[in-house]
Image (cartoon, rainbow, N blue to C red):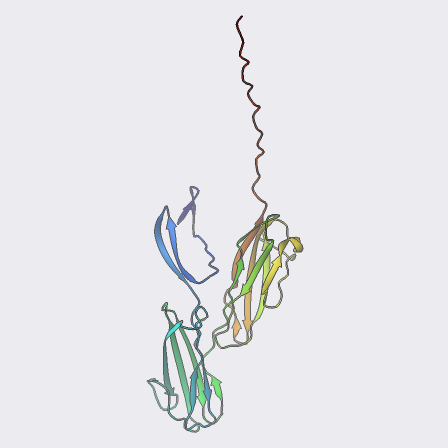
Length: 255
């Protein structure tokens, strides 16, 4: 249960727009630490132009750290027709009419794990999909979180970070709500990336919530990516009226 303003909430929803490590405080005390980041993407290519010497290339990556995010990669393989226990590493050769299941598991520096499994056959000359694939991930950010209507910069930027574990193209679909009601005054198309001038769009004051669903040949994202931003008028400025000046008393001269 969370308490706010003397009232209790059954749960407290947070939306994190950026990866990182967040401390959650209550009355100046850290009550929880949350690590926010995306899972690494496990993927590999196979060159089967010579099945006697297949060439496997690890193409995995960490979307939150493309240069040094992945710290461990482990391949295992099994001949589906003749073996019952996977072996570490990769097969040196592929026999005709044999089906092989190749699995790659990668771990990033924060301990998150990504896995991909593919079936390949020497006779097909190309990899064949094996286990059911994961649907794409929908993720995006809106910045800044608050726009003060009529003050300073009137633009909000959208950055779409959705991805498909297997590199397939993603179709992004957006839904915008204003104060909890569907709103068609702000249309987001394509991948949605860009800077949007709220004044030019004529967006009325309110609390806006944007939902994103990603769809690829591997399925539909299990839950829409979402973030929130709001536009509000500046706080009223009280008028200051200077008090009347006090007149210094006139000094009387006693004759």
